[in-house]
Amino acid sequence: MGRITVALIVSSWVIPMSILVNHIVPEPYMDEIFHVPQAQQYCAGKFKSWDPMITTPPGLYFLSLAYVASLFPGLLFIQPALSFINACSIAVLRSTNGLLAVICSILVHDIVISLKPSLDDRKATLYTVVLALYPLHWFFTFLYYTDVASLAVVLAMYLMCLKKNYLCSALLGVVAVVVRQTNIIWMLFVACIGVLDLIQAKQKHEENLLSVPIDDHFASSRGDSISSNLKRRRSGSAISTVSHSVRGTSLPCLPDNSSGWFSEIWSIILASWHLKWELFVSFSPFLAVLAAFAAFVVWNGSIVLGAKEAHTVSPHFAQLLYYGLVSSCFMAPVHFGTSQAAILARSFWKNRPLSFLLWFLAAVVSLLWVHYFSIAHPYLLADNRHYPFYLWRKIINAHWSTKYLLVPLYVFSWTSIFTLLAKVQKKVWILAYFLASAAVLIPAPLIEFRYYTIPFFFLLLHCHVTNGRVWFLMGFLYTSINIYSMIMFLFRPFHWDHEPGVQRFIW
Image (cartoon, rainbow, N blue to C red; front, side):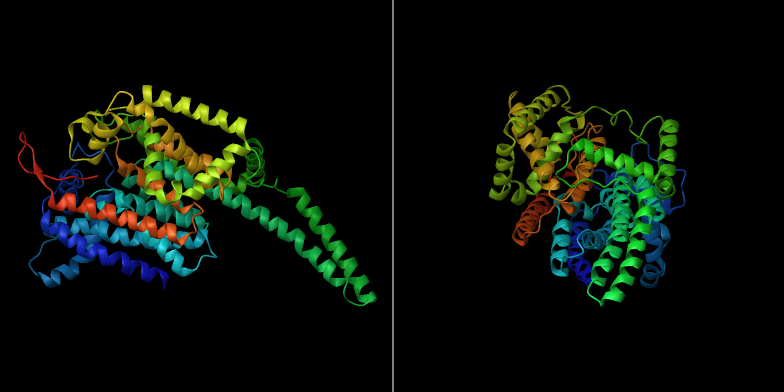
């Protein structure tokens, strides 16, 4: 019932907003001027045609092709003279993302239920709807960009991994990479989570093998003396047999969340070595995808397909700092609430010397990143249609000192994120998440909030936020931002003197 409810709620805004956007903006806008004609070339069967300005693989176009093919019989019934090429109109192509947004919400609902089985359906629906309203995801639902498709396939890949269907997960990883090549990082992250989950499942299985005979042994002491003696002999031999068998293949126990980094990492290494053949067989499909991707990068000479000069890999470490602050702002009721401030203050005070040292080192590293690895891409400086253009000019670069004054906020944001995750996740999980986010964001020279969508979804899905009031506040925040951004996009157009056409504000 939860899936149907979620799908209906999301559809209730996807359908009318799609109609409104297509009515006011009937022509391709921004990156759509590349994506729409390329998809229409595929609809015409011209698969060898390729626009050299497109940087991402053709996964979205193949998905749209399948989608249009499924709709074509119905469209043909309505318009008998309609050709397949004409069916690939901009409205139909945009509706691909509308459908994928609904699918995303269903996937998020299933992931929430899988991660939190004890959660009631009403709360699971609330969490899912709030995530579906996340402004960067919500806005690009109504345009023909790769973001919604990329998120949908990554979520499907993750859900299959949670269900321990590793082959299907790896195959979806192929689709994810074909939609957007940086998804190779999220495929590796998902595989890491799968390894951790498999190790924990094996350890719980061994604990159950040891605990069941012992329970039977103690329960047997309540019977009569003769029966009790017989049961003791049997349970004793069972304990001996199970203990002997488990002792020969026992896994090192994973320490709890209060343990140190080294002990947790070392225990995972030992457990992985114990299960090396099972892990290799289970996760070899992921390794095959990784090898194929590496071969493609070598053959292509770059990770991007087109416009390589404008999208060269650059050490943009400040991008990771921006992501931490932007994510904290989108979770403002969590990170900037009094309860979170109290938790951070208690943690700092409890370990005063170490906490002070860590905060100091984080501040120094952040200052170095801001000073030496803060990139002002030409697209960022020249295009006033994007919100980051104004954030850069009015905040980050308003004064030579402003970018340094923001460092305490960057440090606070990441500290709050780590603290929030540490409540429920192991340190290795947090490290893998941080490294995956860094691997995706740091090489990107352009400040694009769209790149933050997938790491943000993983962050919010794995945070221990159970307060319904906080979720309602985030939903209100997202709705307010969505209304503002869509009003600015649809009803506040402007013109450039040096270029004809209508310009619109966009993320």
